[in-house]
Image (cartoon, rainbow, N blue to C red; front, side):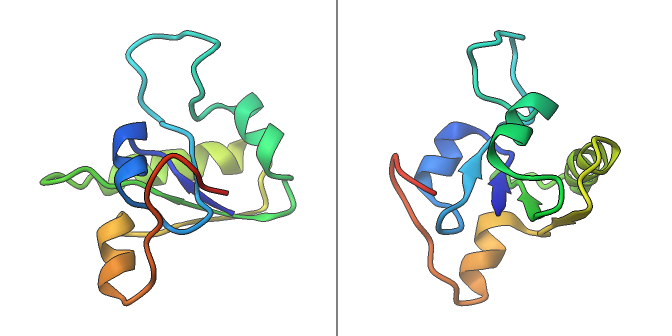
Length: 105
């Protein structure tokens, strides 16, 4: 399972096919907003399944943000946690397809 932890707007512009969007940064702590947190992650992926996190912001890439997200998942008991360095641009540059629009896995 690929999880894009960047903004919803960037996720809609292009993502790994089937990736879900769980933004790791939200300005408000509104429980109705879908975002990266333990309860939300547990609703979409089992702790024994592989989960790959990625995040990309144009003009700025913070590897620390990815490692923070991956570390949180490990602390929550997820056993097969990975992060993909470079996000959607690196995926596309490697020749893999990009999915766009509202949908996604």
